[in-house]
Length: 168
Image (cartoon, rainbow, N blue to C red):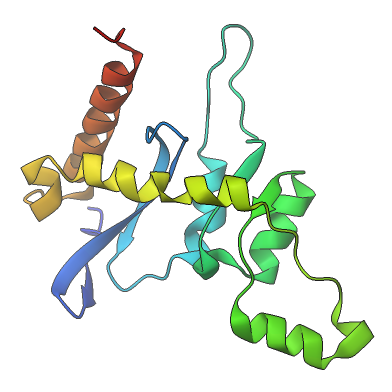
């Protein structure tokens, strides 16, 4: 029997959904963890699940760029993106910048930052709002991870189908 993917946090027993979304606020992949789990360690797991189908051929697994907030600004995440040749649009934390400047020329270069791509970062939050508009997902009535995952996948499919429908 699998664990319920519930963890103790300030609000009690909760779970956390880590997800990736495209610019149209459509979910691409998600990972469920207990509520006390941090965001940054789940970055590679979420990115590994991304599959985008094109008109022909196999699905794409490497996005052009990844926009994230400062929680994902770790050396490990940036190294993972560099290794996969993905552009990182993640701002540098203030303490990381201060340590880099303190080291002088040995501190390295400042991270590149594309302000226009960074503006699209809130598409993940908007995608979460669309997902949580279903009451069962917002309140986590399903205690088994399989049921909750099925609900997330169903809601994601509905979001995708509505986005593909022609505008009237």
